[in-house]
Length: 394
Image (tube, rainbow, N blue to C red; front, side, top):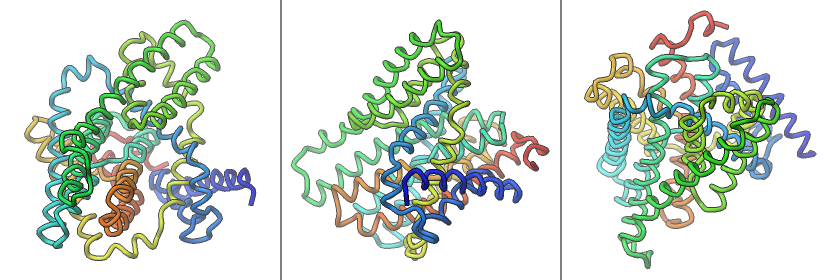
C-alpha cells in the first residue's frame, strides 16, 4: 500500500479513536493510542514495523514541538519562587522510583545487579507527551498543572544522567569497556550541558528572527523551521531532543516580551502532527510484549508506579506543597515512552546479554503506562479541581 495512503489511514484512525474516547469520557490521546494499536502489527497490520520506521521524521518533529511547548512553563520569575522546591521534588520521586524498582528486581525477583541498576534508571523516565496532551485537551489550569511540566523536563535530565552512570558501572563490572569510569560517567553530563547550551543558542536566534515579525503565517514558518532545526541538531550531535527543544522554548519565554505569539502560532499547526504521533505510537505497541511480561514485568510495572506515586507524595510533603499535589502528582507522572525505549535500545547496543531480558520488560511497561497513564492523569487533574467538570463531560 502507498505510504501516503497509510498516512491518511493513520490520521483518520486517530480522529475516529479520539471521537470514541470522547464519547467514553476518556482523554483523546487514549483513543489515538487504541486506534493505532488496532491498525498496527498486533491486530489488523495495516501499519507495519517498517512503516513506523519510515515515519520517524514526523515523530521527531512532534516530540520537538511538544518539548518546545513545555519550555513556555519555565518562566524565570515563576521559577524563582518555586525553583528549588521543584528540583527537590523531582529528585525525590526519581530516586524513590529507582530505589523501589532496584529493590524489587534485585532482592525480590533475583535479577543481576547490572540488570537491576539499568532498569531502575530507565524506570525514572517520564513521557511528557501524553500528559501534555491531556492538559491541552481539557485546558487544565492550577498548581498541579504548573508543577507537572517542569518536573517532567527535569526528570528526564536526571534519568539520562543516572542511566549513564549505571551503564558505566555495568560495563566495568562485566569487563566490556576500555574507558575509565570517569570518562563514561561524564558522557551524560556533557550530553545534558550540550543540549541546554544548543537550545539556548537556537532560542536566541529564534527570538531575533520573530521579534519584529507581525504576520502570523511568517511567525508560524519561522517557529516551525526552528523546531525542525532543533530536532535535527539533537540527532546530528547525539543530544537530548527533549531537553534541547525545551530549552529553545524556555529561552524565548524569558527574553522575548511577546513570546506567547510564537507558541500560539505553532498551536495552529500541531494538532494533526500530535494526532499522527500518538496514533503511530499506538501502532508501535506490541500486544505480545504485554503477554511476555510475566512476574518480572508485572513486578517492574507495579514497582515503578509505587515509586512514582509514593516518591511524589513524600517529596511534595517535605517541600511544603499543597495536599492536592501530595495526593495527585504521582498519577500524572506514570506515562512512559520515547526516552525509556531509547535507553533500552542503548542497552541492546552496548550490553546485548542484558538486553534480551530487559527490553521485553521495558516495552511491556510502556504498553501498560501509555494505555492507562493518560486516563489516570485525567482522573488526577479532575480530582485536583483543575479540569472543568462540564468540559470533561463533553
